[in-house]
Length: 124
Image 1 (spheres, rainbow, N blue to C red):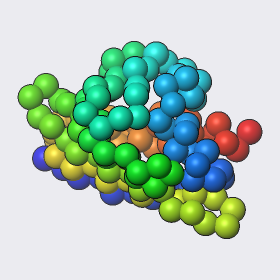
Image 2: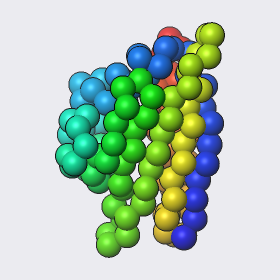
Image 3: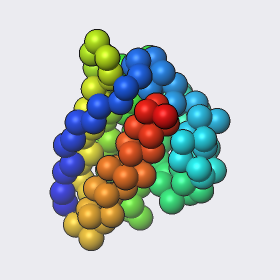
Image 4: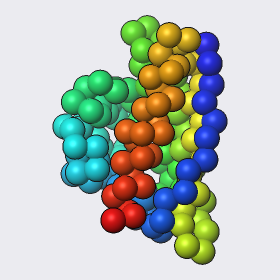
């Protein structure tokens, strides 16, 4: 099992980034795919038309998103922290318990599909 730890810069306020990551309509806009998402602890979610799915664990408005992602019978914990800077939001990502065979795909997905798409949304 592997772990990912990364930082990303998004040129928007933490409130705007948080909204984009927790509002189902916004998720569908920047991802370009169907999503099911309700920003409440204990709710199930799916993104990219079901390619990613799991359970929402904890939310702190404009600061924190904690989820469990599922790989068959393996649970992977995802923690996303938002830190305010003068001109951007610094996003701290940590995901643990990633199956070895899924690591490269998940790693690329975070960089390109998830945070790459969010950066593109706010940099336009």
